[in-house]
Length: 211
Ligand SMILES: [Zn+2]
Image (cartoon, rainbow, N blue to C red; front, side):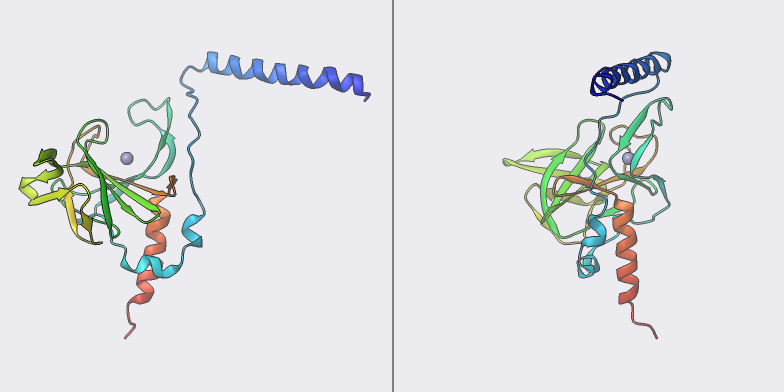
């Protein structure tokens, strides 16, 4: 093929592919272009095993993993594809949520799809907990997450050890059933919480002395 032929063939091919994509979108309006999310898929394997020994499973009275991390069909409109940025862990309403890792409360809120939530920072990690019970209030100039029924009062900026109860499973925000929507980020990129839990189990089950 001569250079001149190549110069004509390549733009024509790109044009035809573009036309095909436009036609497909027009034919199937359910296809939604999902913005690519930054996902750190291999970080879990590269972290020193000792890191996981103090990590805590985030929910008491665990029932089931109801929706995994990653791209999925929308629960409300199955024709739409969406990015699920966390792991859904179902437990009876009122079950306690435990802090996954020692850190500092950097954000609290009670509006929007996430409902009542808390974000904790542990070094390069950020862990978020959505759909909790209670609400956020400002007292004496400080922001607090307050769940009276659960005996929870947590201040923004507070240090929280791993395994400590930080709230209870609720139905705040957009949710069809009681569960924790749990999100992990490492250096600003989403990480699959399922991969983290598997690594935690692997390390922590080795810690138990065999008799
Ligand atoms: Zn979720």
